[in-house]
Image (cartoon, rainbow, N blue to C red; front, side, top):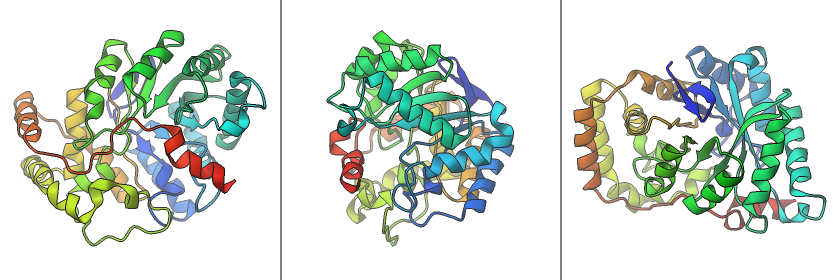
Length: 335
């Protein structure tokens, strides 16, 4: 598989989001199946694996996913890039400086991952009670100590990104982005391109909407995050069907799947972009990685863009998502 750069971090042009092996997409698969799927992704050419300290909190426990990813990649550790993420909660602010708090989170993640360093360390969500400049300063200290190669932010707008980047250069931004979630194109992506910052879309298949597979009869239960995705409501599924039909047309022309066309479109559009589609299903992961074999011509891409821009999107989520309004708040309550 070809490679791309997240600033100076070299990764495969498509990564794997590992959350689903621990929670978020219904019942998680058995541990041995998850480990086999991660290793098979590596054999397919993927060298970029994304996890977080919080993944696993519903079905298992916080940190379960990091332990799983660490075990799966232990024998090929020197050949892969691991990204993980931290939250800083209000109840931690009295325990030490921001740098001390960040270091404690990282050390716990390193222990679970079974490694001495991680290549990419994200602030998972912004805590509005902490100046982003303090987090950037802490990340710079970790980088100079050799504990991380680079740092990133998730679900941020361009103003906050610019503030952080002015203190310590940001390696990557992980925002929601897909054919039906394009708000990052307004300012965040142009800033990333201009400042040599990688862009890592999560949910690039829009929680399955862009897969071309029918979701109208699916029942998302338990901790399945898809029950909160507005685009998957019955009325919005119908409203967004013309977009799926457009993707299907191109998929048929390329003997590809709709998911592969969705990923090929964004990879064609931005050279600094590396999607991390998430799945708990081995076959779906292999399908997503197969998007690296699908290429749109410039003429096809421009025609696709023209037709896409004429279609409305129903049920947008957007990339600006404050920690104080999201699942991190719920985690604190559970504790």
